[in-house]
Image (cartoon, rainbow, N blue to C red; front, top):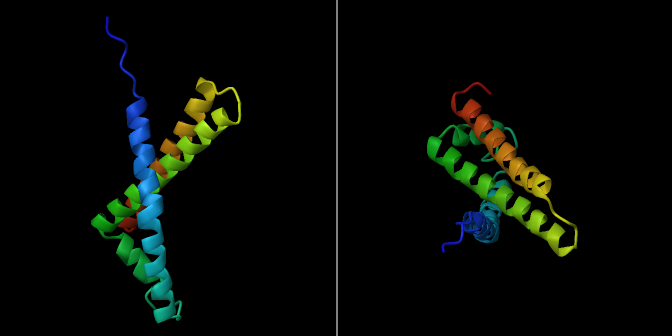
Length: 123
């Protein structure tokens, strides 16, 4: 007799990928942004001006990288909160499951929609 297949490995895969992004990618990006901020402290014409950042996000590859980073980070955070509730002896139900993973999906789609608006130059 076969036991029913579980979708739990997919959640743990995304959790682990989000942890790697938070451990490696986010600190690297923050160091680059910090260096760019010190290199040109002029906020209107420097490396971190609104026009420069908007132009950078108008590139489809950079938008895809940013979406992946935000998606995995949000997924990691919601998964961690969900399982922390269990560790704190809060009885987690399907409502908690749908709330946290729905929040991760909603934030990811909101990020995708905003990036699409920036890419189409509507924002």
